[in-house]
Figure 1 (tube, rainbow, N blue to C red):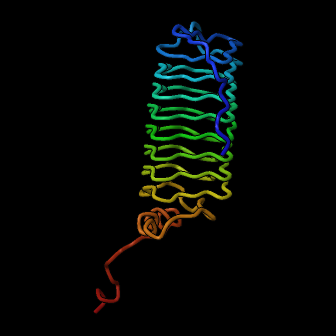
Figure 2 (spheres, helix red, strand yellow):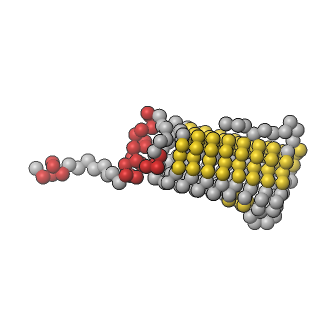
Amino acid sequence: MHAPRLPEALQPCEHAVLDDEEVWEGLLVTGPVDVPRPNPEHVELSGCHLRGAQLTGCELDRVSMVDVVFDDCELSGVVWQEARLSRVQFNRCRMSGFVATQGTAEHVAFTDCKLDGANFRMSSWRTVDWVRCELPGADFASAALKDVRILASNLQGAVVSKVKLDGLKLHGSDLADIRGADALRGAIIGSDQIISLAGSLFAAMGVSVDDEDDADEAT
């Protein structure tokens, strides 16, 4: 995992604006972010630190982020279509309903983030960590996960149908009621997770558990 490379000195910015083809370089962004028009395109962030920034419901198309840190930010309802993320960290961020579909990400870390109902469909994640995150109902359908770790996180009811994985580790995570669990072939879990995952695997394979014994009924 490569950490973001921030400049030694950042320029404070308390009234940030995101518009079409906006470029942020070396900024320390705090407070609300103004998005003057819907769905700005081709926004670029490089070497920036967003601390307590508020981007609720912000929709960006084809955003590019390199060497960016988000600390304690409000990102609920954010939609980033076809995003490109490299060396990005999200720490203690509220990201309910976060959408990052059809994008690519490498060397990205989510730590202690709330991501309930997040949508990562058809996106590509390489060398990415989700640690101690709330991910109930998250949708990873048809996503590509290479060298990804989802550790000590809540994945109850998450969707993993048709996921393509290589080196996925799920240690310490709650795997109850995962949908499409048969796509987790090759994933690595701990022995303490076998029972919680078993029900989801049986459901994906069409196996029913019924304690009634037909033989006993016949007698």
